[in-house]
Length: 149
Image 1 (cartoon, rainbow, N blue to C red):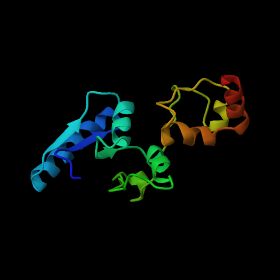
Image 2: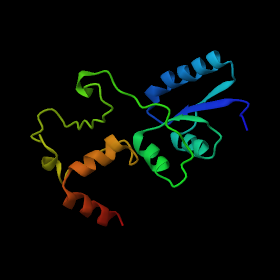
Image 3: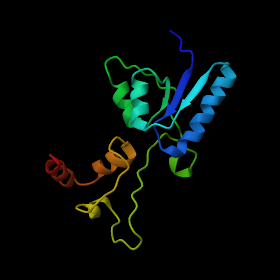
């Protein structure tokens, strides 16, 4: 069944919404179909609406995509993956995790951050949570997981 309105959303950082809404408008204008960009609700609710089939196109980070695509019968199809233009990306689709410490901090490696307090954007972010977690000592994260139980 073809939807009356093709619904788009973004589950990425709010800074991406203007671009995503512009792509939705472009699609609507060039395909002469009704489109709607869903915003104004939390990204978690947007993702739920996408999973339920009420949103048809969703920009999402790599990890939530992989979780969905790795199902025995995935209900989504990858349309595109970004390749950033900056020199550090070397024209490749790669993730970077930038860890910021206060100016003058003696820490210059992940191991020197063990046992210190961290802030992260959210735990379904590959570059913002999982990659730094993997890069730090296993013992530190195992201790955190045990204390959280």
